[in-house]
Length: 176
Image (cartoon, rainbow, N blue to C red):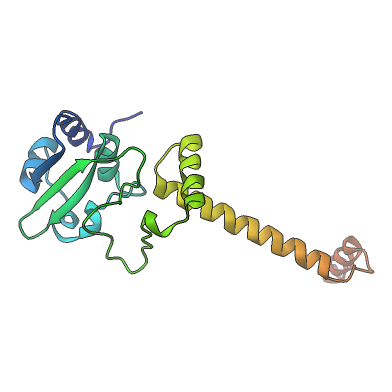
Protein backbone atom coordinates (compact mmCIF):
# COMPACT_ATOMS: atom_id res chain seq x y z
CA UNK A 1 0.00 0.00 0.00
CA UNK A 2 1.23 3.46 -0.90
CA UNK A 3 2.27 5.51 2.15
CA UNK A 4 0.23 8.62 2.84
CA UNK A 5 1.72 12.07 3.22
CA UNK A 6 1.21 11.71 6.99
CA UNK A 7 3.37 8.56 7.17
CA UNK A 8 6.27 10.50 8.81
CA UNK A 9 3.96 11.48 11.69
CA UNK A 10 2.89 7.85 12.06
CA UNK A 11 6.52 6.69 12.23
CA UNK A 12 7.37 9.47 14.70
CA UNK A 13 4.54 8.46 17.02
CA UNK A 14 5.41 4.77 16.70
CA UNK A 15 8.86 5.70 17.98
CA UNK A 16 7.32 7.27 21.10
CA UNK A 17 5.97 3.96 22.42
CA UNK A 18 7.66 4.36 25.81
CA UNK A 19 5.57 7.44 26.58
CA UNK A 20 1.94 7.45 27.69
CA UNK A 21 1.32 10.94 26.35
CA UNK A 22 3.04 13.07 23.73
CA UNK A 23 2.48 16.83 23.46
CA UNK A 24 3.50 18.43 20.19
CA UNK A 25 3.28 21.93 18.80
CA UNK A 26 1.95 22.31 15.30
CA UNK A 27 5.42 23.50 14.26
CA UNK A 28 6.99 20.31 15.64
CA UNK A 29 4.51 18.26 13.63
CA UNK A 30 5.34 20.28 10.51
CA UNK A 31 9.06 19.58 11.04
CA UNK A 32 8.31 15.86 11.32
CA UNK A 33 6.13 15.93 8.20
CA UNK A 34 8.39 18.18 6.14
CA UNK A 35 5.50 20.41 5.04
CA UNK A 36 3.04 22.89 6.52
CA UNK A 37 -0.22 21.73 8.03
CA UNK A 38 -3.34 22.90 6.20
CA UNK A 39 -5.13 26.01 7.42
CA UNK A 40 -7.97 23.84 8.76
CA UNK A 41 -5.53 22.25 11.24
CA UNK A 42 -4.98 25.72 12.72
CA UNK A 43 -8.64 26.74 12.68
CA UNK A 44 -10.93 23.71 12.88
CA UNK A 45 -11.15 21.36 15.80
CA UNK A 46 -12.60 18.50 13.68
CA UNK A 47 -9.34 18.28 11.73
CA UNK A 48 -7.82 16.79 14.89
CA UNK A 49 -10.66 14.35 15.57
CA UNK A 50 -9.98 10.65 15.83
CA UNK A 51 -12.11 9.81 12.81
CA UNK A 52 -10.62 7.67 10.06
CA UNK A 53 -13.23 8.37 7.38
CA UNK A 54 -11.92 11.18 5.19
CA UNK A 55 -9.06 12.07 7.56
CA UNK A 56 -5.75 10.63 6.37
CA UNK A 57 -3.96 12.49 9.17
CA UNK A 58 -6.09 10.70 11.80
CA UNK A 59 -5.43 7.35 10.12
CA UNK A 60 -1.70 8.01 10.66
CA UNK A 61 -1.90 8.56 14.42
CA UNK A 62 -4.59 5.92 14.97
CA UNK A 63 -2.58 3.31 13.03
CA UNK A 64 0.45 4.22 15.14
CA UNK A 65 -1.59 3.37 18.25
CA UNK A 66 -2.29 6.93 19.39
CA UNK A 67 -5.30 9.22 19.55
CA UNK A 68 -5.67 12.93 20.12
CA UNK A 69 -6.68 13.74 23.67
CA UNK A 70 -6.52 17.51 23.96
CA UNK A 71 -6.16 20.41 21.60
CA UNK A 72 -5.31 24.07 22.09
CA UNK A 73 -5.81 25.87 18.79
CA UNK A 74 -4.72 29.17 20.34
CA UNK A 75 -1.40 27.78 21.55
CA UNK A 76 -1.17 25.53 18.47
CA UNK A 77 -0.55 22.40 20.52
CA UNK A 78 -2.06 18.92 20.52
CA UNK A 79 -1.67 16.01 22.92
CA UNK A 80 -1.68 12.39 21.83
CA UNK A 81 -2.27 9.49 24.22
CA UNK A 82 -1.88 5.80 23.60
CA UNK A 83 -5.08 4.43 22.12
CA UNK A 84 -6.80 1.50 23.78
CA UNK A 85 -6.88 -1.03 20.94
CA UNK A 86 -10.24 -2.34 22.12
CA UNK A 87 -11.81 1.08 22.60
CA UNK A 88 -13.42 3.76 20.52
CA UNK A 89 -10.83 6.20 19.22
CA UNK A 90 -12.93 9.16 20.33
CA UNK A 91 -13.51 7.80 23.83
CA UNK A 92 -11.91 9.99 26.46
CA UNK A 93 -11.07 12.81 24.07
CA UNK A 94 -11.61 16.23 25.55
CA UNK A 95 -13.20 17.51 22.38
CA UNK A 96 -15.61 16.26 19.75
CA UNK A 97 -16.76 17.39 16.35
CA UNK A 98 -18.49 20.73 16.39
CA UNK A 99 -20.16 19.94 13.06
CA UNK A 100 -23.94 20.08 13.50
CA UNK A 101 -24.20 16.99 11.29
CA UNK A 102 -21.94 14.86 13.52
CA UNK A 103 -23.47 12.21 15.74
CA UNK A 104 -21.45 11.49 18.85
CA UNK A 105 -22.38 8.55 21.04
CA UNK A 106 -20.34 7.74 24.14
CA UNK A 107 -19.90 3.96 24.53
CA UNK A 108 -21.47 4.22 27.99
CA UNK A 109 -24.78 5.15 26.29
CA UNK A 110 -24.88 1.82 24.45
CA UNK A 111 -26.11 -1.51 25.83
CA UNK A 112 -23.44 -4.17 26.26
CA UNK A 113 -25.09 -6.22 23.48
CA UNK A 114 -24.66 -3.29 21.10
CA UNK A 115 -21.01 -2.87 22.07
CA UNK A 116 -20.48 -6.61 21.57
CA UNK A 117 -22.01 -6.38 18.07
CA UNK A 118 -19.72 -3.48 17.24
CA UNK A 119 -16.62 -5.26 18.57
CA UNK A 120 -17.53 -8.46 16.70
CA UNK A 121 -17.85 -6.43 13.49
CA UNK A 122 -14.40 -4.88 14.11
CA UNK A 123 -12.89 -8.31 14.77
CA UNK A 124 -14.42 -9.77 11.61
CA UNK A 125 -14.00 -6.90 9.15
CA UNK A 126 -11.29 -4.70 10.71
CA UNK A 127 -11.44 -0.94 11.12
CA UNK A 128 -12.50 0.82 14.27
CA UNK A 129 -15.71 1.09 16.26
CA UNK A 130 -16.83 4.21 14.38
CA UNK A 131 -16.63 2.50 10.98
CA UNK A 132 -18.33 -0.59 12.45
CA UNK A 133 -21.20 1.58 13.71
CA UNK A 134 -21.63 3.07 10.24
CA UNK A 135 -21.64 -0.35 8.58
CA UNK A 136 -24.08 -1.80 11.11
CA UNK A 137 -26.46 1.16 10.85
CA UNK A 138 -26.37 0.99 7.04
CA UNK A 139 -27.14 -2.74 7.19
CA UNK A 140 -30.00 -2.10 9.62
CA UNK A 141 -31.46 0.55 7.29
CA UNK A 142 -31.27 -1.86 4.32
CA UNK A 143 -32.86 -4.65 6.36
CA UNK A 144 -35.69 -2.34 7.48
CA UNK A 145 -36.32 -1.25 3.89
CA UNK A 146 -36.43 -4.86 2.70
CA UNK A 147 -38.86 -5.74 5.52
CA UNK A 148 -41.08 -2.78 4.62
CA UNK A 149 -41.18 -3.75 0.93
CA UNK A 150 -41.97 -7.33 1.93
CA UNK A 151 -44.79 -6.14 4.20
CA UNK A 152 -46.30 -3.98 1.44
CA UNK A 153 -46.16 -6.86 -1.00
CA UNK A 154 -47.96 -9.14 1.47
CA UNK A 155 -50.49 -6.46 2.51
CA UNK A 156 -51.35 -5.40 -1.03
CA UNK A 157 -54.08 -7.25 -2.94
CA UNK A 158 -52.74 -9.55 -5.62
CA UNK A 159 -52.58 -8.14 -9.13
CA UNK A 160 -55.29 -9.41 -11.43
CA UNK A 161 -53.42 -8.41 -14.57
CA UNK A 162 -50.12 -9.51 -15.96
CA UNK A 163 -47.53 -6.77 -15.40
CA UNK A 164 -45.68 -7.76 -18.57
CA UNK A 165 -48.87 -7.28 -20.59
CA UNK A 166 -49.34 -3.82 -19.04
CA UNK A 167 -45.82 -2.81 -20.01
CA UNK A 168 -46.28 -4.11 -23.57
CA UNK A 169 -49.59 -2.31 -23.86
CA UNK A 170 -48.03 0.95 -22.65
CA UNK A 171 -45.08 0.54 -24.99
CA UNK A 172 -47.29 -0.26 -27.95
CA UNK A 173 -49.49 2.78 -27.29
CA UNK A 174 -46.38 5.01 -27.31
CA UNK A 175 -45.35 3.68 -30.73
CA UNK A 176 -48.69 4.64 -32.28
